[in-house]
Structures are given as C-alpha cells and as structure tokens.
Length: 169
Image: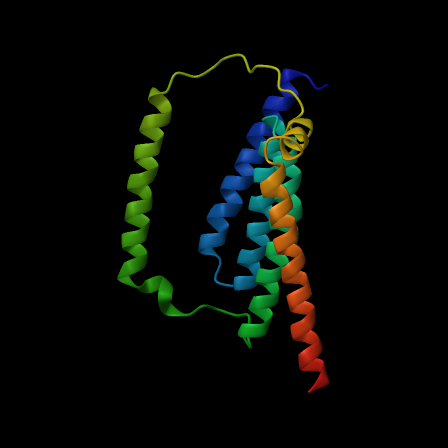
C-alpha cells in the first residue's frame, strides 16, 4: 500500500513520539499533563502495532487503553486531588536519583543486547489478524470465550442490582 520508505519514516516517527512522551510522563510535575503524555504514548504504541501487522491489537490499544483506561485515570485524578498542581519535593529525594541510575543501567543493558542481535532485513508479508482471532474464538477457544461472556453478563447484572439497591435507599 505505502512505499517502504514511508513506512520506515512513520515507524521511526511513531517510535520517537512514544519514547518522548514516555519520558515526559516521568518529568511532568502536573498529573494531568502526565496523563496527556500517557495518551500520546499509548497512541504511538498502537501505531507501531499497526505498522508491524497486528492491526487488531493496535485498534484494541486505542479503544481499551487510550480510550477507556486513560479516561478512568483522568477521572481518578480529578476526584482525588483538589489541586492538579505540583507533586511537591518528591523529585529531590535520593530515591529519584537511584531510580534514574537503575534506569540508565537498564538502558545500557538493553542497548547492548539490541546492538548484538541479528536483525531480519525483509519483513514477511503478514496476514490479517482479525480473521485469525475470530476463527480461533469460534473454534479452538469457543468454550472459554463463552464462559467469559457469561461471567461478564453476571458482572453487569450484579452491578445493576447494586446500583438499584443504592438508589432505593
């Protein structure tokens, strides 16, 4: 569909967006700003999934994490903190510097492993993952799929009953 050069540029762009926004999550003092940076991190990861041929996983990443979980996190931030301001002097503690040191050591270890790894130069043609997942759900994993749907149905019914009891009081 797209040329290899465009796919490579988009891949590195999404990787840089993911990396930069992940670093910004750590360094922002404002929790709401960190949540927005988390959104960009999750969207960048979804773009990487889609470019690597896992289209269902990429769409699920956007819907579940960037859509649902992030909204829940922002809702929790607004409910628990009266002021979405500075986190305080936690940044100046010794634990922060120890964490930065361990992070740097982990980065060096991962960089060394990545540089020594033999890389595949030609990416094999991927097939659509949604069809494969659907076929597996309706054949090999039919019983667990149906059991999960029944459990989710009971959870929904239970939550409605709990809410109705609270409303009657």
